[in-house]
Length: 448
Image (cartoon, rainbow, N blue to C red; front, top):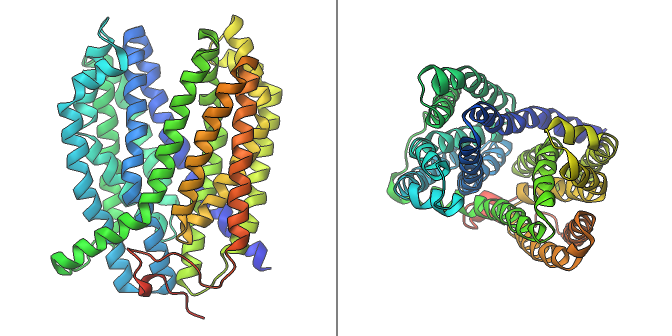
């Protein structure tokens, strides 16, 4: 019965998160669809800008993920002081990070656009125009991430899902009005994105206010600094894990480029198609992180049981994705408009990537248990080592084409899974979890 209860909790938490994550991917696709009507330079500008934004998401994960875990643990312990500390720490970290990223990005928008797109054509100027709006607007994006972190930590994953759907709905309506109706072009896509997210943020803040999660008394400057450090200590390994994985994916493109241009195009399309599957894996990860942290806060040292339920759940998702891609790879490539050698290369890649997806699903899901139990730093080291191995394997096996790249990805992920599984089994001491918020024992103690 206990296992069934854990499984049901994971599913109930993960399903809304999956919809939310897919909605985030869809926002970029909506902008790409409307930008495509403006020409190739506009498509390139929006594609680069959204990729940069995805990378910058890793920065605020320090606040968002750290807040989620700390709020979940405080909720489990029914500790009002710890809950106040978690909420304050998330907002303090947002206030520290946001001006640096927003102002720095705005000032560096033109060099950044040229770095990504070169000096030829109109694409760099279009990307710079997009950045001029989107990078200051990152403040809204970051604030929404903190709001989502608080809500998820409190056990509510449905409200963040609704907020993401609201933002996407507004972007879908505003894009044609601003891009073509007001003739703002690429800038219109950036404005619609910021406006959609602003509306969602306003609704999210309202939800927090109703639950009294914003009406928290301060504790002075010293207490605020301590809260900030606590959230940073909890969230930094999770942010590092994301950034390392994103950087590894970008570096892998350079390895694929050695094979050929068609293979690069095929790899790019295939990885976008795989988002539908990988978002499901990350949904299970977030659910496992929230559930584990909540249980530990309540004095229930059951992270092992959570892991035992998260692994088969994610494994089934990975197996399902592998089978679906195996049978529909050709139609997926056609759906993205690929033809000729690009379609052939992409179809082959999607048919070979199944073992990697199954292993990736298991590793990501187990990572949620590490995060929720305060051992994300260990996981980040495994991710870093696995990413280095992946690039080394891919370089050595690139002579086999995209199937060789798939094999390299699967081999490196197998090593990461083995390392994570071994660490999960060896951490047997009850209550042996890393301290929350800078190692304060009162924040991490598991009561018998």
